[in-house]
Amino acid sequence: MQQDIKIGFLLPRSVLYPAMAFDLYDGLRYGLMSVPGPKKEPKILSSNIGVAAKQEEVYAHCEQLLLQGADVVVAYINPHTAQWLHPLFTASGRRLLVLDSGYHFPSFTTRLSHADFISLEGNLCCRAIAQKATSDGHRQFALACSFYDAGYRPSYTYTQTTEEEGAQIGFHHITPLRRADFSLDSLTTYLSAHKETALLASFCGDMAEDFFTTAA
Image 1 (cartoon, one colour):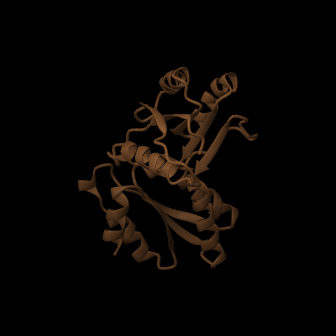
Image 2 (image 1 turned 60 degrees about the vertical axis):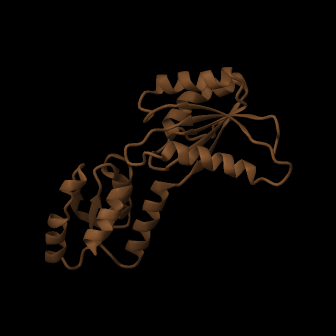
Image 3 (image 1 turned 180 degrees about the horizontal axis):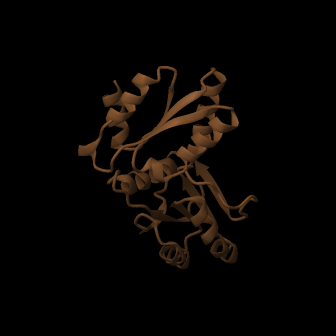
């Protein structure tokens, strides 16, 4: 590990995961310390970007880290924000390491010269699941999503993939935002009346626990 490298970290804030910034920060530190060779505490400069809703603010935080001497900036952001930030890294000659959930489709088709991505490939996983389900012979589906997941791309990926495979989604169920209002009643009613239906689901955070507990 290069001993004198400075790492900038754009830390997120999350309603579902209050400790997310701490977990990412500690994970980066311990990961760097586990690299073979002489041990030296990495120099990490951090800045909190909230939920990263305003690209101009993220850009300003990123620029500040670079002005403080960061050689590489690590950021939990989506590909759209990475593309927005990329000219800053091209101009400075530094690198951007994107931690990406994989729930957004990038709008660019060529590689960003000064950016690298570590992605959970959320959409790719949804596509693989739908393809596996249709290859097993399922043709009728119900789709269940949490309030948060329904606002991202999994529902689109599930729908597009099943249609490409000659299948269809006949029922959608989106659970309410508040955990106290969580219910699968309408989904249960539909599945009881349509026995041939297979279920596709996307639930994040504590709502995943609610889904599995209630479904059981």
